Length: 316
Image (tube, rainbow, N blue to C red; front, top):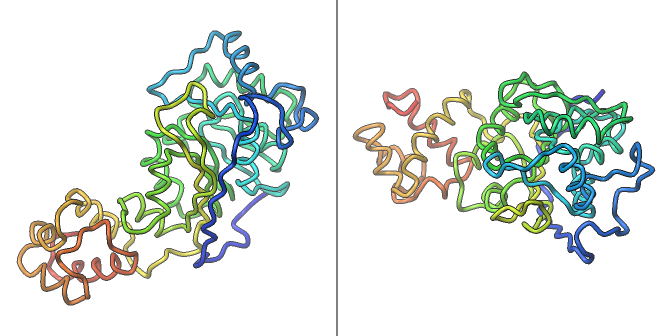
């Protein structure tokens, strides 16, 4: 099932922002809640009272340093699952499945769900929650160490500390998914999706995908509540990189070195890295040496790399 079908360059992404407003007390039933008849039984781990009861029975306490903050708003959980865009022909790799809030909703939409969870205490809970769901496969593994299956969609509510390491593993593989949907820290989501304040991760995202900020999720929609708000970013993965560069790993290595000095002007940074003549090379490709790396576009990064690679520089 699945595969890389129907994926284009997505040159003009839909940048709309959908903010789902919560109109009922936490865990209350509402028109968009997941219906019990779509699951194998009435248990919905997005219902806070049911989740607390479930975790207590398993003697599980969330660990803050592991980013164990669970979505306990059924309406928002439904919206996240719907935004993933999976259908009956799709396989979905869910990263950081936790107690199964998103898992059961993806299983109601997708042909198959591979739910990956590192914490074996949560794996036991996840198995209970998904009992009877024949299209759910649970993997007790570290997603950063396991070989990723070739699936068309990757989704998850991932711990914030995983973001930087997980994206390259997903996007830079030879056969990437066609879509990636991740709940991340709101500040990170904004940095990925708006121009003018890029990071190395933002550059990598835009090289391989077209991201959009789809949903905002307030901190009180999670339990325990994190210290920051979250957002869902949906990335439509490009069929080929956004700019024609022969050595994309080389470009990213150069960018990584430059972003170590993100507050400094490019002229000073590249003189330090590549030696005399750096300012003139920047000017030769139309880049003002007084600019800083976070302001460059994809095309300008491509031009910068061509100017400094294979011409005696030390950047690569």
